[in-house]
Image (cartoon, rainbow, N blue to C red; front, top):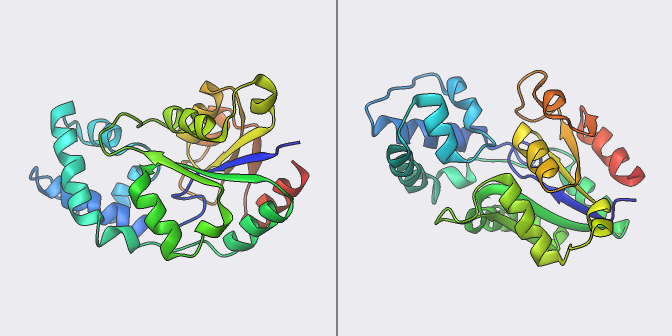
Amino acid sequence: MKDIILFDLDGTLTDPKEGITKCAQYALAHFGIKVDDLQELMPFIGPPLIESFQEFYGLSYEQAEEAVLKYRERFKDIGIFENGVYEGVKELLSICKTAGKTVCLATSKPEIYARRILERYELSQYFDEAVGSTMDGSINTKAEVIREAFRRLNIESEADKAKTIMIGDRKHDILGAKACGIQSVGVHFGYAEPGELEEAGADYMVDTIEELKDLCIRL
């Protein structure tokens, strides 16, 4: 039985497409890179930003750090709420809490922003803890976020880990879970490329929020 559920945020509980792509567009424009089609920036949804700027647009590490600052310049007051909760998510979280699960957010988004999003969309009440990346980069990868969640939830033994599962929509969620020794659920309704979650080795797969509700009850 899985008593502790870690949820990703972007692409798993909320649809952040507009905010993330417009902020990435804004940051790239600072370097003279013009992107007119926001669809091209969809890969920015999910992974750590500093990795995405390097991988997708060839920025150096130092340039990527600057790009992240430009991204946050727009995101902190505008992009953060160009967002919306997927239909059925509140019921999903309520089901988990009613079943006695410990529910924790584990997102690569800076925690300061993630908590504001939970508050704005009235999701905070469902979470026992909310963990995100740090603004200084000391916690950045999904594995680092999960380990911080372990620390806050006092998950130490292998028995504790066996009762814990990560739910997310990108390979980073699945690979982060593997690196931390826990199982994972990949959700197809988010922003993964075809075959991405399967290749990463998700232990369970769902196509819809309704399927995820059923799985969370059975876990």
